[in-house]
Image 1 (cartoon, one colour):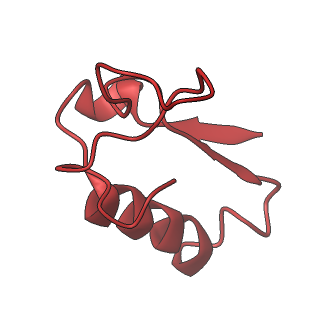
Image 2 (tube, one colour):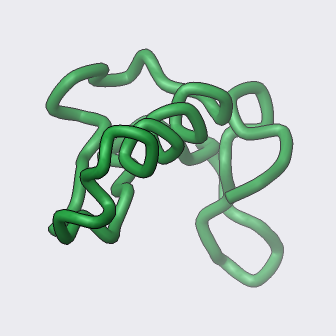
Length: 66
């Protein structure tokens, strides 16, 4: 099972929020109940791709990368 950021936050996400939601899955016992994935629904990617054509994270929201 997993948790998806879009259902609660839409585009109002950043690195700190996603990390805190992952920590909450652990601290509330949801990880032990079978939740294994934190899915970032949308709005995480930059508007341009890297030189190899790969999506890259939006640096203002995910300075540490994905």
